[in-house]
Image 1 (cartoon, one colour):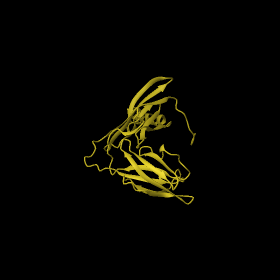
Image 2 (image 1 turned 45 degrees about the vertical axis):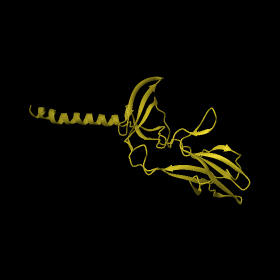
Image 3 (image 1 turned 180 degrees about the vertical axis):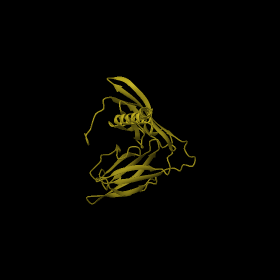
Image 4 (image 1 turned 135 degrees about the vertical axis):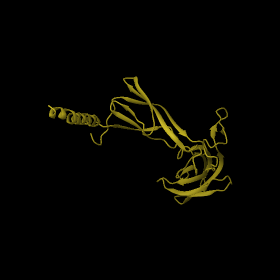
Length: 236
């Protein structure tokens, strides 16, 4: 039915999703680091320079009280030592960049970690958030002028068709090269561009396709009769 949701007569399993890239460019510039404060209605209200200079910046105000932030620490590859429970950086690569922020008013101070890979999901380091210090969501982001991983060459999904728990068909699909099964065409249509953790498929079934092919067959049969049978009749 038009506009409704219809189930498939089989299951589709994603065995593997691969993004193939060209070699990264040698002239990639370091990313621009940005720290933006959003209010509770998700509107940006201020931007803070990502610098370890000890300066304190006004984020905004709540009920007449100003809220401040200060960047205390920056880790390019945030991790936690499971033995000592101390925060460490596993490398100097920007694999999991994080900032330790001090959020404060005139009377209250607490510290939070914010992560570029997990915006809007801070981790409390110390203190207790108040209505004022938690009124703003601090979002840490990296802006690249070019993708440091290299330009995308191709992305593909290895699919497996299952019926009653049994694998009945497998194929690796790419854009414009679908997998076809029982009248369905399964296209590679997109993927998670941020983390490359999922694949987006488009499934199409055109019930009129067999009728079209049947029409072609009948048309060819009609032409054969015109060109071959009619001369035979006139020649008698």
